[in-house]
Image (cartoon, rainbow, N blue to C red; front, side):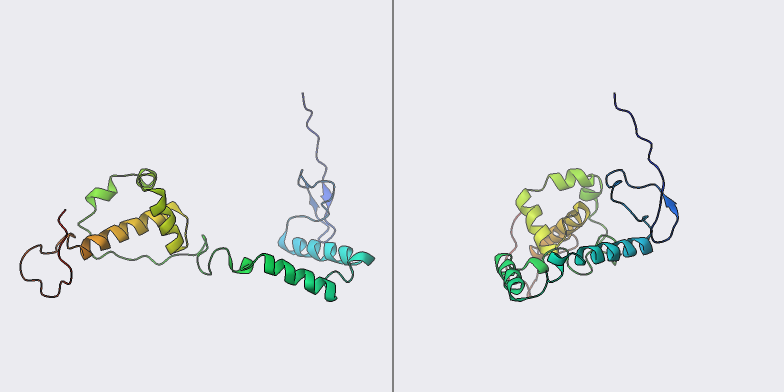
Length: 176
């Protein structure tokens, strides 16, 4: 049976307030979790690391320039990966009002998870690549928009006359 150790409070080196250290880093933690103290902790650790003789010129000199260049050649495009600017989860997204609200019956009754899992993985991957988002909500919305647009292109959308004079139609209608 494990005995729980009582964690003792420590005094932050920066703000001098008492705090309970994180159990994972309890032996090394010297600062509390306040933002100003985190910055002070980072500066303190950096000064400590740079004070060692072997680290003073770690980022200088021709050897380190060539080491960095070799790493960049081995990892092309590394700094360009990740979420694109303005695509963070915290960013608010502008809502768009769809033009036609009458074609909801096929989509509103299906739960997002069920609708999402019914799509082939190729479609999901392609949409995630095109939109830059891997969130189920975004992919499901994109699938719905693409489906509606495809129906309009093929002349199968709601409110589109299927017969009669369509002089500006460039492709024949595809039967359902």
